[in-house]
Image (cartoon, rainbow, N blue to C red; front, top):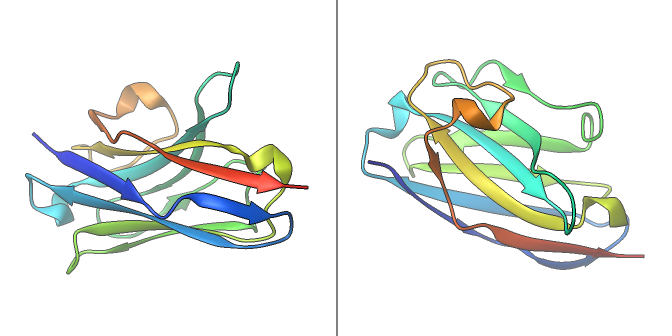
Length: 124
């Protein structure tokens, strides 16, 4: 079992930056692939970023590429999502996810464990 706890969400103005974190426990962190997904009201959950066991590769959809960056700190059992140049359409609940596969993919079905989510709201 892997437990995931997100933190760092909040309200930010368009064009601003925010970093959210996810603390993992229950399994050696270096053996977990990590991902971030988001879900806006009335929309399906969508992939945001992923990082594999070793830290590479990282993956992003075109909607956030160049603005968001995922990173992991194995010493702190934590994965981060740095979000820059935020837009109102980035408003959503952001979920951290973990997979026991070495390669972290882009589909939610590839992930075995999920956090409770953290709200990110971008005002225009």
